[in-house]
Image (cartoon, rainbow, N blue to C red; front, side, top):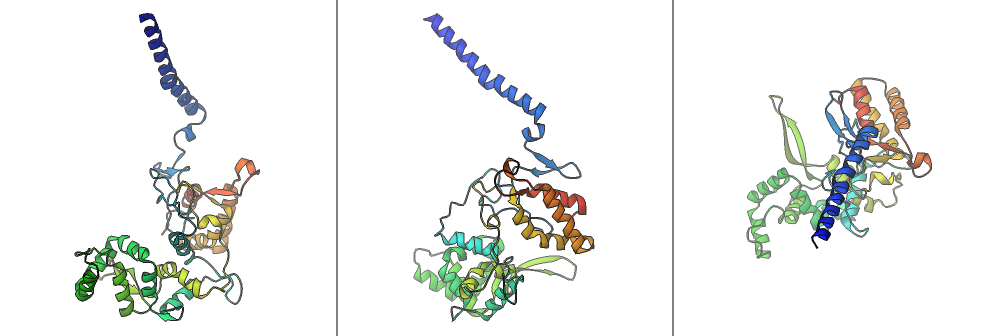
Length: 338
């Protein structure tokens, strides 16, 4: 009996040593010797030697000088990899796609071929009529309560703006409490729909948006104000504009500009996606460097071609580029964005 137990313990110890010590050490040694860059997370560094990210994980880029990655359902959080899991019938998916399209989509044909639709979305919004009825913002909030609540919860300044509104609209809040006795002390998000309904009546053709001003001392200050133009209008109300202009011929966009990856962290975009963004990126770098725009565009286009690759050495799939790699090269060539 003791002999069997001792042999079993020796076998267990041997198995633990092999699987938990020898095998991991062997893999680590091979990785460090043969693939040190990949084995250490494919971390890339800036000109000062500071790590700026991994080529394996997407990160957001918001400046116009940079190519932007695919949308991320995980907010580009490497510890929270996930997809949106939204069904095609879910309005939240339609809204996210429409929000992306509004500021960037262009006309495909006709007198305005190649021009962005964004200015027309703003002009239509300022007329404050949707499907022939007045009060676009009121109709938007009534039809999509969750979007109205999401706007309030998206930023502390939004909630603060609604809080300030409650002080000057006590009767409206009281009416809400009367109609909703289960919410005797409503929070800003609870009041989202009635807030937007009141706002729409008091500010036709306007939407609350962040506006930055510079005071006499040169200090920038941002506050929520009624506006009739800007990216918030273009994004939020593009879907309603499209409904009112169903026959408008619009360009097709690369699918990966609008869809998230399964992980929400895909570091690559298609070459087609990058080329669609090329005009914006090149124009901004030309302005920053005070150089000829066509020359900058040709340089960046060549960079995209040089950095592009297709899976299995071109045997399958579309050509891709790594967003971080290309953006880092742009910074190395042209310096920091202005």
